[in-house]
Amino acid sequence: MTSDNGESGSTNRRGPFSELLSVESKLALRAPYGLGLGIVFPTVLLVVFGLIGNAVPGNVTNTGFTILDLYIPIIMVIGFFGVAISALPIPLVRDRESGWLRRVSTTPVGPSRVLAAQLVLNLAFALVGIVIVLLGSVLVFGATLSVGVYFVFSTILALAEIFSLGLVVAAIAPSQTAQNAISGALFFLMLFLSGLWYPAAEASGPLQTIMYYSPGGAAVNAMLGSVFGTAPPLAAVATMVVYAVIFAAVATRYFRWE
Amino acid sequence: MMSERALEVPRPSDTSVDSQKAPEEVITVQHLTKRYGDFIAVNDVSFSVREKEIFGIIGPNGAGKTTTVECVSGVRVPDSGSISVYGLSPQEDRNSMREFVGVQLQETALPPRLKVGEAVNLFASFYPHPLNPDELLESLGIKQIEDSIFRKLSGGQKQRLSIALALVGRPKIAILDELTTGLDPEARRETWDLIEGIRRRGTTVILVTHFMDEAERLCDRLALINHGTLAVLDTPEAIAATAGGTRVRFVPSRQVDDDTLLAIPGVTKVERKERYVTVIGNGDLALSVMSSLAKVGVSVSELEAKKGSLDDAFVELTKDGRSKVYGGAQQ
Image (cartoon, rainbow over all chains, first blue to last red; front, side, top):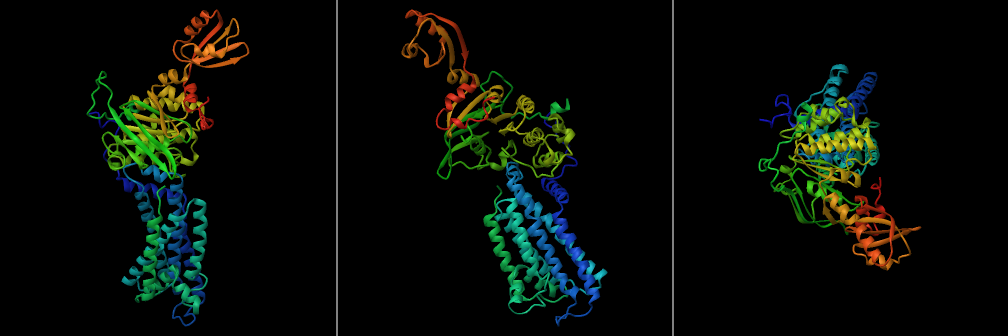
């Protein structure tokens, strides 16, 4: 009889996870790292390389691709890195350092849901980035893509590998300052290895090998064939799988809630 | 009226409102021990908390207070000993316990851009039968800042929000750690009123503090923890009376040596300042001083007796190498 006094009505009450997701989304938009790195940055890169591609049409250096073709997977992979190793660890390291994850662990819900909400949210940023790059390159810059099951396969592997690396950063960074430094250095390295300055397809010799066997280069290599409907190279797929397993194991081993 | 109801907490069904009945012990801690490496933070501590009391845990910084309550709330795992909270183990039954134990951890910050209202609504969604967030904010006096982000809040507002988060799940037990540290005197007094309000509504409160005035004012019983061990467990008045002792100051009609004074029943310590002599001890000290000195032909004048305070008791019970860390208690 009195037990319902003061209780919020059962109507309009969301479950803990959707409430958490909604709150984390609002927070992510108030400090829009994921939005900027996962969506705005790839969009800007698309426009830049789309315009360059239009100015310098045709195939480049015997790769059989236009400049925009070469950069489509690079731009996507860079977006993944931005979201996963820069944006994703920020709230996780901050909320661990501030004791917030520990505070949540005293409720019936537990901090793993915070991590899950962050993953869902940042994957959503990455997916929006993918859609923008695909639609923009085809509709605005006239690329002829053939997106199908190979593309989905390569993209899922790339996301698994790169998001696991992001969780490694969140796991090993002892403080927000350290996380900033680690994420910044790693992001810059991955921009290079993914081919932002010099696509791996155009490189040769040891540099190309290093790029192809880096987390970013392997993802770009797999996705480059995939966006045109051809099977990704086995070496690239295997490289991504190995990285994904290693990163996931390290993240699981070292991740702390407090 | 709404705000009164907002903090109402359902009473556990197994206790009636029969005030004659002995209070039920809802938390039992037995032989709790917790080490961090070689350092023994808590060493064989045992105590019980009764339903609907405000149970204080006091002690110098680093004494093991926070570790003790963190073991009770299930945040830490004890090395040995047993803890029972409404018959449940904080470690093994952590999931069911979290539904009825509200915790305010020392030095927890929220995400900097999280708004007050969002935080309380979020926590409400975590519990099966939460309080109405709006009414809770209203009753804590922070409804008007529900759209403020955490980073912009004052110390007092942050503490109120922290209390709101600890209470929104309608807990049967609220564990509050260093709630008023860093607050100005006015905000501290307001927080005290809130804690009394929580108890009036039927919630059992464990309060960790190093402020003696706070412990004296709020707590029904106090556990004093020093060097990880339980030094004393009693009501604040009893602790003050026993350990704080009585101080009797007087001017003797002629010189009396320390041995004579220490021979008086109840006297444990003698202090001298100018012509004043102060004896410290227990019992009806003024009377025994006068009668004993009369026997040796000494009369006393300007006699002044003062009961020891909880502060005195605290100093007495924690005086050793570490008593100098006794920082915030002198107010």
